[in-house]
Image 1 (cartoon, helix red, strand yellow):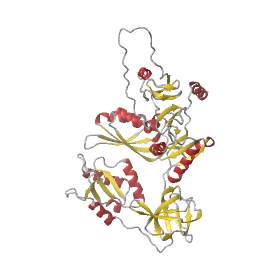
Image 2 (tube, helix red, strand yellow):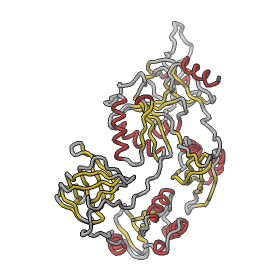
Image 3 (cartoon, rainbow, N blue to C red):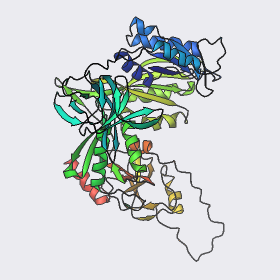
Image 4 (cartoon, rainbow, N blue to C red):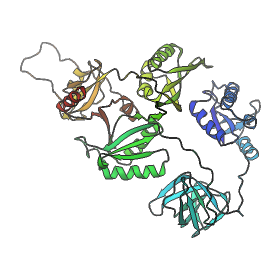
Amino acid sequence: VLLLVDAFEGPMPQTKFVLKKSLDLHLKPIVVINKIDRPNSRPHEIVDQTFDLFGELNATDEQLDFPIVFASGKEGRATLDLDDEAVDMKPLMDTIIHRVLPPVADPEQPFQMLVTILDYDSYIGRIAVGRIVHGEVRVADPVTLVKRGGEVVRAKVTKILAYQGLARVECDYAQAGDIISLAGISDVRVGETITSPEHPVALPTVNIDEPTISMNFSHNTSPLSGKDGGRFLTSRHIRERLAHEAMMNVGIKVEEADGGERFTVSGRGELHLAILIETMRREGYELEVSPPKVIFKHVDGEVLEPIEEVVIEVDAGYQGAVIEALGNRRADMRNMQVSAVGTIRIEFLVASRALMGFRNELLMMTRGTGVMSQIFFEYQPFKGEVPRRSVGVQISQSAGSAVAYALWKLQDRGEILIHPGDPLYEGMILGISNKGKDMVVNAIREKKLTNIRASGADDAIHLIRPREMTLEFALEFIEDEELVEITPKHIRLRKRHLTDNDRRAVRSAMNR
């Protein structure tokens, strides 16, 4: 495994995550210090930080004796010593050849292959991808699938696909050490073992991290459904797409609710689910999703919640505001240091639910200069309540097209999130309310005209450019009774209950 570390930023939370995984698998990483061409790079300091990270993760003496390659991927050159001129990538290739041991594979033993990736083809179905650990396999050979629970399933190989560069080619035979794709095994999943029928022994499985965040997906029920070029609009379409995703993506879990009209989708983080939503949007799906919710665990009568390790890098003038903001969210500060260029790097442990909405708050308080990285750390006891969204929203009173004059009058009450001419419907969120409570507003009213001649010129309409509505902002911003409407062309915010009377009835029922 190659551990790629930025010569300026150093080890990040994601660096720690992938390194821990590789050390747990008893691999010996090759450390590549990349971007040495950057003016502010500090490769020697980064090497020391990387060594400390190895020690923090309890690396063995052999793993601590890692080779170091200094490289510039942009310029395509590498060197083993910064005093030597870097010409090409040959030093990196030589290090891989000399330090990475060949796989232990015996073609004489019975066939065994651990499934590491799944693929899908509309013609041949599910495809299992992995490396043959022992033995050999041919097309039409009978095989046995050993599932995680020990269940044994018989199957037959219908196709073998090998890799030549980036291309996948069909072949009749493969042996130990080859990385191949097998077709013909319909119910295979990642972590299961494909073996010969005479030797149904499973290989050690790879532990799969449990989901920490869940969201509800459902078909788009807004009045604008089907008007944005969506091709897949029904619950049946969404069910089939999510079932396919759960089959291919081992980190995704899908459960049906409300008779199949709603789907609870769980993943390893907000970004994990956001990538799925964006992929579906680009494929032509229309859907609406609820705010992300953390998945709690109950162990020995105690409630545990997911904790994330967060690294924030800001200019020196903003460190106090960042520490105060995360302190209010019950974060524990672990470390703070000044980087070589004068920025402040602060490390925290924060509950996942406390981070929801913080990324946008960080950008606002640092004027867009703050950088935040986060990664799952562990489950810890419940940290207590955290502050919720401090602002309200402006809700459209009726359907129509947004009018510039009306938006001009409304922007004094808070930030507007739509453009003039955008379609509106009752219950759609069109802006933020600075008062901290929701407001029902009229954004389609025109300026009244009279036959009285004004003594002066009309006031010019100056609209503040609304922020770009991104999926990340939408998911972080919405509260429990709100939804994100997602179509191929637009991302909108809306109330779960569109009419004001329905929302009042729900509030009354909750207060009883």
